[in-house]
Each structure stands twice: as C-alpha cells, then as structure tokens.
Length: 124
Image (cartoon, rainbow, N blue to C red; front, side, top):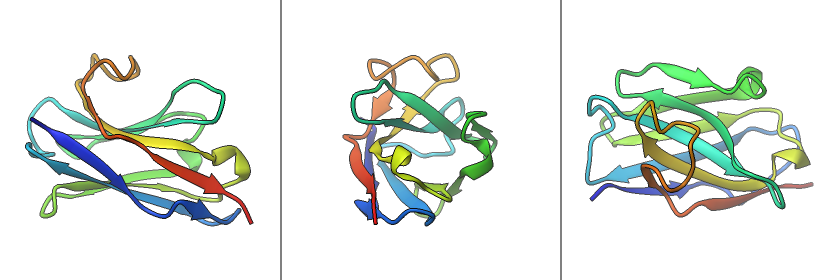
C-alpha cells in the first residue's frame, strides 16, 4: 500500500518561497508509469493541479503557475518537493501530494493515492 505524507511550514510570508516535501512509503518514486503530483485547494474553491514529476524525472507544470513552480525529487530518500516562489495570500490552500497515472492526472481525489493534505497560509 503506497502512502504519501506532506511536510513543510504551515505559515509563509508574502514574497517568500513555499517549500513542501512529500515522503513516499510502500513504493518507489522511480516505478515506471507513475506521476508524482502536487495539487492544492484554496478555501472555498475546487482542486487546482499544480504539476508533477514523472517516474523518469520529467516535469509538467500548470501554465498558470509555471513561472513560479519547481518540482524536484530525491530518489535516495524517496521524496519529492514542491517549491512555489513569490507567494501571495492567494496561494493559501490545503496542499496535497499524490501518485497518479498519466490518465488519472487532473481527475480527482478518487483516483490514485493521495496524502492527507497540509494547510499552508500565506500571511505577514
């Protein structure tokens, strides 16, 4: 059973960089066919898919966030990391990491394996 757990600061100041790590157990992040994704849900809004790092190390980012987003991985620790720069209060959200297939990307929480989510607030 694959398990994912998000970790990182709960409060980030405006203009700083938000950095979250997802630690994966029960499966390798280099296993063929899986895409390790970040998703967020702002208060009162729907899910927004931020991007992924694939099993081979390839990246995809949402066009609306691409200029501020970087997703990387540490295969020795079986972790992948989200960095979102120049944050504003509009980046306040519950952030999730997930393992999905390419066909499941963008579908929703009933597909793939998801972490429980972590609340991040951007405020001075």
